[in-house]
Amino acid sequence: MWVLSASGCRWLGAGGSLAVAVGGYAAGTLPVLGGGPLWEPRGSALTLAGAVLAYLGLTLLVAAWWRYGVLLARGLRHGVLATLACWTAPLLLAPPLHSADVYSYIAQGAMVLEGHDVYGAGPAVLGPGDLGADAAASVGGNWTHTPPRTDPPSSSSPPAS
Image (cartoon, rainbow, N blue to C red; front, side):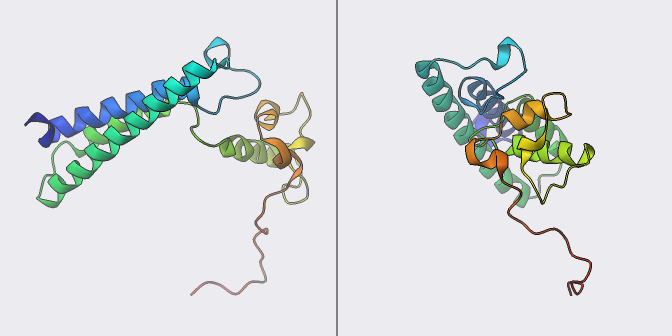
């Protein structure tokens, strides 16, 4: 059976990644501002279809990953980087799926570049003209005014052993 071979796993996983990416454009967590027509919100039926496609693609990708792992355990060593490239390339073009956290991380990085205290305020401190303002507008609800939940690194802490 072709799917049991390394090449079959590579193409099954690539198809799964492509399905996740395409489904993500309909059901992903799209930015609030910017992005052009590709990022426009979709209708609920298309969003549902995109979610189903993304989950189907994720299922295919996991099945291919599992089978490829069996092949690697049996000594397969050729084509690993090609498989990684085939599985990763479509996901590099996909919007974030199932979480808007990435926009918060981008906004926090922009806060640092703009000279704001990341541990003292949330992404709402970024003004419309600031770097990362589009990402800050996409941070969900309460989190726009909330600083990170982790404490800043402390220089007085003993080193980890």
